[in-house]
Length: 278
Image (cartoon, one colour):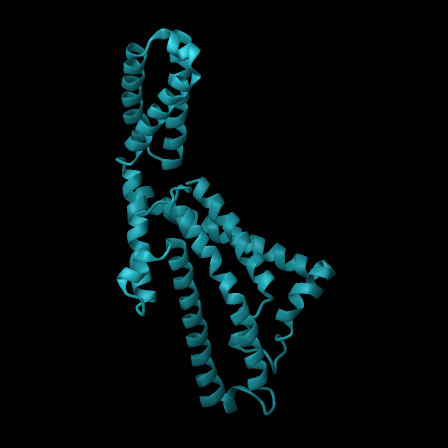
């Protein structure tokens, strides 16, 4: 019986260690260990010795009970409050970006779908608002001062850039929705308040993240130029619009849809790196 007790305790402690590591909270370990030790003691005193050997399902039941206890403990830790912060913040952002949906309708939607819809709406708002303001003031109001005759982008060129951008936007919106889902599920070590880590670490992680993003953007962009098949199949679409008389603010997102995904999913690696080191 001592051997089976050791196995039960070892598996339970390993479970606590894993959960506390992901939660980033030592209280999960200390609180969970007390409860599991108590559970193991009670289980080993109430069940006959033979039941551990003759019926392996009893051992599995004991382990499940212990692990369930650990999970219950973890929901009472500060990390559960952090996850609540994330969900409340995401709900607040949804209420701002999706005012055309009632709170009841937003609550019925899968959270990852609501996050994707919010990102999709906002990328359209930012794209068309900033591009439209630039086009109005720079081309309409001051075009004769900034451009020589015939050098201003034509409406046809801007329309093609908008078409390509709109086709890419659904994929652009997917990454932040997936990342938000991972955070809400507790699969990262993201923290919900700057005070959780301190201003110093916050600034350090910001610099680390931006450095990684710029580094990978540079090498991916260079690779798309050096690898001819990548340029021919994906990247050439973007460079169709970099001539003086065709370049407009609407070309900023005018990438091939699959290239748009690649440009965003390398950022996911940077996000994961920064979260795993926090």
